[in-house]
Structure formats: C-alpha cells, structure tokens
Image (cartoon, rainbow over all chains, first blue to last red; front, side, top):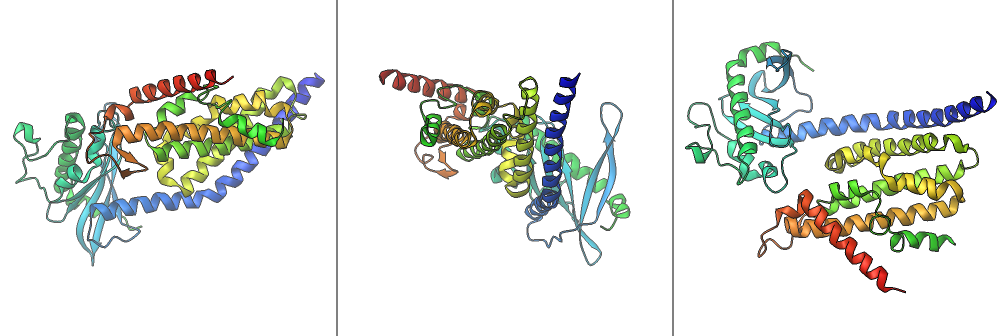
Length: 199
Length: 197
C-alpha cells in the first residue's frame, strides 16, 4: 500500500508540473495564435477581393445552406464587403470533396454577380497533380465568371473551365463548388444582407 | 565517453534515421520539401532536448515501475509546447507539417533516447546525446527532402533550379519516392559503414 501511494504521489507531482507549465504556455500563445488566424483570413480575403479595401473586421451573416447526409443543417458564414452602406461583394467559404478529402475554398462574389476571385485555403490533393488547383493558372481563371454567360463545365466537355492536367476530380470539385456558391449567393443576397450582424 | 563523443555519435555512427532506423513514419511523410524536412527535424530536436534534460534530472526521482508514463507525460508536454509555439510564430510551417507535430509524441527516437540514455546518464551528457541525435535526425531529413524536392519538383528550398531542362518526376514527392530515396540511402549508409574497419 505504501508503495502504491508513493508511485501515485510521484506521478501526480509530474503531471501537475506538466499541466501547470502547459497552462502557462497556452495563456501566452493564445492571443498570437488567434491573431495569426485572423491575419490569415484577412490575407485570404484581400487576395480574393484584390483591389478592394478590406477592413480587419467584416460584418458577417450565418445562413443555413442545406442539409448534410444525416439531416443536420449546414450553416455557413458570409462576409460582406461594404463601402458607405453599399454592399460591394460577399465572401464565403466552400468545402467541396476533392480527391484526397475536403478542399477549403474562399470565394468572393461582386455586387454585379461576378466571381471576384477564388482561393484554395487548405487541401489534401495529390502533390504534383490535384495540388495544382492552388496555381494562379487554375484558381485565377474564375475571376470575372458569372452565372449567365459562363458554361460551367471543363473544356473537355465543351465548357469554359480549364482543368488541371491529370486532376479531373479536383478540378471539377472546385468548379462545381464555386458555381453552386455563386448561385446560392445570388439567390439569397437579400437574405444575407438582412441577417448581417455588425462585429 | 565525453560530451563531444556523445554529440558526434548521433550524427553518423548512431544516426537515428540511417543507423538506428527510428522515427521512420515522420521521415517518410514530411520530407516532400526541404523546408518541411528541416522544420520537422528542428521541432524533434527541441522535444528531444527538453525531454532528455528533464528525464535525466528526474532519473533518481522517478521509480522504475512508473517510468514509462512519467516519460510520456514529459515528452508530450514538450510536444504540446512546440505545437503551440509553432502555431503562434511560424504558422505556415505549422500548417505544412500538420498532424506530424503532435505525432512527435510517438516518435521512437525520443522514447528510445529517454529509455536507453537519458534515464541513466547525467544531464550534461544527455544534452550532448539529444543535440547529436536531433541534429543527426535533422541532417538526415534534410538529405532525404533535398533529393525528393530536387527530383520531384525541380526546386531547392522553393527556388527553381532544374525546371528549364528537366521534367519533375512527381513520383518522388509521392509516397513511393519516399520509400525509394530512403531505401537507397539506407543501402548506401550500410555499404559505407561496412567498408570502415
């Protein structure tokens, strides 16, 4: 019994010291980490809406965009780029299924209904093939596209979109997601604007 | 053995990757670019240094029966520390290495050095051991990732060096390229060390 107690006490001491030092480290890195995350978002927004003035805090709205396969509602954030109360554009994130898992995209739509830009934030596509969706050549081509005039198919199938060589699944995933997102934003624009909350 | 002998053995004679063949999972997974390779090597060195120091200091305090849980708590504390620090100050590298930073906890080099060396050696020698092993690991990862990045992307540290006349062999930055590079280098190291008396 004495030994059991001794072992427990020693292990407790070690774990407490570990917990204490981690708590201290967490306290001191929490703010820099949050700041990095925020900067990352602002940087991505600046890339998507190049040439626009992006404040560090954007008003946003949360809307239900559909249901997943378990019937749970999917909610997404929409960020509004405004100038003197006029909405210049809406930015939103998309999570299409790629070849190697979910792709995270940031997309912007201008007030005229054109794509302002598409940026791949995170992906797990095959290096050298699907990973090229991050290239300016691919994701840059969406800029200026819209619902009416653009044929949302890859060139191979008679559309307007250049696909990444050897990566049909990745290319189509991005293309379809951008198309669906654009359609959703145009159809729900007034809803997004009415639900916005100032941050 | 003295400080410098302990330090040097990790670089070549007992190189963790090519001689002890430990920590192969992160070695194969993250060496797609030199930056990732060096980042992973340095993060592992940090954890190794911290855990070796503390395990060596506490070696007479920790009873034999609970040494494994005690080592794991110490190691995972340092892993969480480097994970937080990297997320805060080198965000881009932290994202590129992803899950492999938390997985340093189960890197056998660290547990191996704790069990085989730090738990029975004085602090100064444990520091030499950790630095030697850590730098040996970093150099190995740099070598593998240099070969893979050069042949697989035609770049060195992100700068184009080969692309004007060389079509990058994508397979080299895919998993098969990791096994090919690792296997050939392992064979080369065995060949060299066998020729030495």
